[in-house]
Image (cartoon, rainbow, N blue to C red):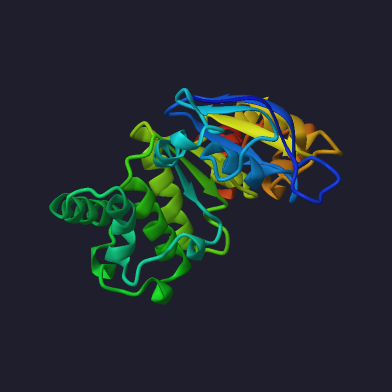
Amino acid sequence: MIKIQNLSYQYEGSGIPALNDISLEIRAGEYVALIGPNGCGKTTLIRQLNALSLPDRGVVTVDGLDTSVPANHKEIRRLVGMIFQNPDNSIVGMTVKEDIAFGPGNLQRPPPEIRRQVNEIMESLGLQSLASRAPHTLSGGEKRLVSLAGVLIMNPRYIAFDEPTAYLDPESRRRVLQMMARLHREGIGIIHITHDVSDMADADRLLVMDKGRIIQDGPPREILCKMVEDQDAPVTLPPIMELMHFLNRRGWRLAPDILSVDDAGREIHRLLSGSLPKE
């Protein structure tokens, strides 16, 4: 597991901590969604998970490896892959195939093994037709899949996604979310920063951050239902959740934990169908 104990971190020149006494465990194979207002520390937190940043106080360990020990960094960064909000920050190759091969090349794996792994990863993500393309010519969704391929080829145990569906068209967004759900089913731990509550339908657990702290931790639908009634909730909830709660207060017997318009439509149809007279 990833284990965080009393973690605090402050950026140089800042008067307040970005992370304030956080303790947390994330188990292998767990899908954890992470939400909170801008500036609350979400990205700062996931950077601690693979030693891109190190604690000022406290301890972070990944499968027992302490991130503060430089000798552990190579293995920690293999175990915890990072998909940044801007995929251009992690793409370094002149072609898609070269970019995916960059990580195992740095580990000096044999070239035949690298070629086999690159081909397998591209096939699994549907990237074969892009193999010779320059990354800068790709769409946002394609770039995110290339970034994911470069992480997957390192055989990670956990992957942290920083708003992976931001600025994507609906089809690219669907592909990215489907791939994340597939990785979860295959046993990879997922840490998913998102502003879109509907993205977290598959999450096992929801963390809510505010002002550098974890303020809520538990089942996503349970936490979100409570937040609908909280006028001081630190995040904006989807209008569909507020609508369902409004209808419930007006006497409609609808499930309160609806996260998407499609689910709401099915739930309302169910209720109306049950109230119609049978012929």
